[in-house]
Every structure is written in C-alpha cells, then in structure tokens.
Amino acid sequence: MQIKPRNYPHPVLSHFSDDIVESTFSSTFGWEVTEASCIFTASLDTNNREIADLAEQGKAVYAYHVECSQTRFRELFRSDRKSFVFKIPSDKLEGLVELTPLIIAAERIPAYKNEKFNKDYEARSFDINKGDIIAVGQGEKLTVTRDYDPLKKISSIFSVQPNSSAAAPPIEVNIDWEKVVIKLPKESFERYGLLKKRPSLRTTLSSLLIVPTLVHILNLLKELYAEEDLAVAEYEKRRWFQVLDLRMQKLGFDIRSLEDDTLFIAQQIIGNPLTKALSDLEEFVNESEGELNVS
Amino acid sequence: MKVKVNLMFLNYLERNSLLNLKVNLDSNNKLYTQSSPWLDSYFNHHNWQFQSKVEVEDVKLEIGNFETDLENTKRLYSAFKDLTIPQASDERLWTYLTHVEFWKYMRVRWSSDKPDADVLSRYFFSSNSDRALIRNGIARLWWFGYASYDETRRDKFELTKYLLSTQDVVENLLGRSFSRNPKVTKTILRIMEQREKANNPIKTRKIFRPISEHINWLGGVKILDALTEEELEKELMPIVERVGKRYFISQLKKVKKAN
Image (cartoon, rainbow over all chains, first blue to last red; front, top):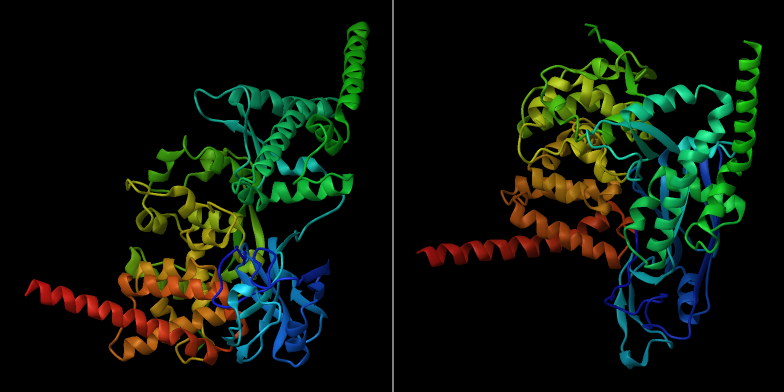
C-alpha cells in the first residue's frame, strides 16, 4: 500500500503534511528469512503526547501494513507495544514487499483533540472511527527472493537471446522483463553460442556484452532517480533490479543514488572482468600459436 | 462408489525459453493463430520444458467465452487447489499451460485474431504485479477461485458466481489493491449476494464501478484490514446504498425525460 500525500478528513501525523506540528513518528524494522517464515522486528515511536497516550490506553495501536503484489499478499500486523515482532509464512512473500508504519484507531474515539493540531484547525475536535489512520510513516520496500543465494553470480540476471527481426541492430538491450535481455542478430547469437563453449573466452565475452549493458542500465537508472521519474518504480519490481541492488549494497554502492563513475561500478559488479579478459586473451593467443607450432 | 481421478505432473517452461518467447512476440505473432501447439517445433529439440513436482488432477476446460469462466474456474481451481502461492504466481507454469495444455481453449477464449487481442497479457505475464495473475488466460481461473472459494459454504463456489457476474466486476474488484485481502473481497461478494437476493443487484457497470472507486478512496484514509468482516460490512453498506440510490434516481430522471 503506497501511502501517497493526501488530505485526510481529520488531522494525521505524517511526513508530508503539517496537520500536526512539532511532532514526529519514527519507525525502524529488521527482518530475517528462515525456511518457514519471514520474521520482522518492528520499532515505532512518537513524541506526540496525545497520540502516545491513545496507544497507552489501548484506543490506538502501532502497526505495520505489509503488501506484496507478486503474491497478492496483504495484511496488517498490530500491537499495543512500540516494539513488536511479527511473522509471515515465507511462501506468502516474493519479490518486492512494501511496508507502511502506522498508528491507527483501535476503537471509536469521539472528539479527538490534540495540542499540536495545526492552528488552522482552531479548537476543533474530530470523531475517529476504528481503523482510521492517526499517524503514518515513510513506507519502506524490501526484496524477498526465495532462492536468493549470496554466492549467486551476477551473470544469472542476464540472458542473451537471438533477435528474430529482419532489421536487428548489432545489440539491443531490453530491461522490461525479469532478466536483462541482450538481443543479438541471429548470426551473432550463433557465433556467441559457439564461443561461450570455450572457457578461456567466457570472461572476454562477458566484457564485450555485460559491461556495456550494465553501464547502459546504470546510466539510465541514474537519470531516472535524479529526475524522480516514476517509471523507475516498474524496474524496481524486476528480479534483475533486486539482485543488482543487493550486489551493489554489498559493494557499498547505492543503486538509487549513483555518485561514482558507472563504468567503474559496472567493472566492480562483475568482478573486474577486463583484467582477466586481457589475460585470457593472451593465453588464448599463446595456445593458438602453440597449436600452429606443433602442426 | 470410488471416482477414478487422473493425476498428472505439471510441466513448466524453462526460464530462458520463456524469455525467448516474450522478446520475440512481435515476430511470432502469426504462430498464435495456429490451431495446434507449436513450441516443440519452435524450440527445435532444445530443452524448453521441465516436469515439475506438482501433481494435480487432469482437467478439461469448456471451450467458449466469458460465459464459461465460472464453470472453468470451478474445474481448474478444484483440480489445482493444492498449488502453493509461489507455484500459483510462477509465470513459467502458466505460460506452459496457455501454450500447450490449454491451447485449444486459449485459441477461442483469447483469440489472437481479434484486433484488440493482447497476446502478452493473456498468454504470459505482462507485468510483475498481481494484475498479471488475473490477466493471464489460465492463471486468472485459479486466482478467481482462490479469491472467492469459501470452505464454510455448502456450495464452496457460491461467491464465485458473484465475482464472475460481469467482466466489469472482475476488473473493478480484483484490479484494486484492497482485494488482496481475502476478508475484504469476500465481504464485498457477500454484499453483492445480499443485494442480488433482495432484487437490488449492484453488478452493473454504472453501479459497481463507483462503488469500487469509493471503497478504494476509503481504503486511503482508513485501514480496511483492521476491521472484522462485520465491521467491514457496516462500513461498506452505506456506500453501496448511496451509489445504488444515486443510480436509481438517475434512471428515474431518464425515464421521466423520455416521457
């Protein structure tokens, strides 16, 4: 559930409005995946006295709303405590998961008043019903990959495919699917298929195809995030994005805020293939010269 | 009397083969008009399919259009009921079924010959969100069953009848994120059932669409998931009545004008 900035029928404590002033609502969570479940440890807090009192009295609850579009999962987890743990069976979540921290009414609250209401509300009070949002925090996203293997090589998110079109360009990259698809004209694809059978040429092929593809993707993402283009949300749902994001985090890069040179980052992600490729090519040339000498 | 049930292991598409089909969809358009499955010859002996560990009852689908959706939902969901959520969300499985197992059904129900045919969304998953699950020609049958199947009823598919009363109801209900909560979906279907039985149906587009828009708006200010089914019904009934009344008045005005 993406909570977008909106006007509520009553004042709500949020980061996007000043309905309630001089007040904060903070949230953090940790999570781990076991074979049976995803376990979340949530911690919510507010410095607004009236809202904290409502929770203390059991009239409001702290909650996390969790949604996963890929598995059509949606549920609310609530507690009368600021810190709580909740579990979700691991087969209910896959891919992008959205979590929204909330404080919601647990029962009807007639004539709700708050010292920190914006002065525009003057001395008004509001009738709040069960389920109404009292405070909402910044939504968070995380990726749950069932078969995520930290040792999985980055090349698994790439797929080289033949391009059946008569006017196929030398190389075409498509990032609209779960993997990054690198399309080659039929002849090039067949050549690639033969060459990749030779172990000594694999890193060279990787440099030829994957590095420029990665640079292209990183440049595109850099631009989209800089312009806050909503189109990037579609890419975030893709498996290639999620795997890339995790790999970059391990290397100390933030995919949503790329500051370093993208060619440098791409080389780092693949494990600096250029050096190995040059060494492999040298070996390949020596082998070939050796074969010529023998014959 | 024991009824003999035929069991079979489901096959699924190899991942790169699935991608191959998707990225070359434009060039392969004509293949979707063929009368028989064609993946074997297309992939030319390459390992494009695998047998899964999922064992289900063999099932035949009724050939036809929207009028067959209810019967086919019952048949498919009953036969595939034990699919786990990860299995039921796996594009490789459903794409195999649309292209091979249920090809003849797909050719009629989602004919690619029509000018507005959407091969990508009906034969594959066109996106990574749950919208894809209710668009794919075979997956949708399973997910309709999953959303409306009620173990507590004598006829466990009783609510499915209301879900599939019109294409508009399906789109406006399951196309909204609030429907991901089965409690919310079933409450709405129960309200539809009550209204139908009171001879005051709400399934028509001009009524159901504004109702679902109102519920969507409500869900933005109130967490519907926090309510019990009874509380949900209390919350949603005034919306249904208000929209129904507005529609009734507008129809009366039309009649008066015509006279």
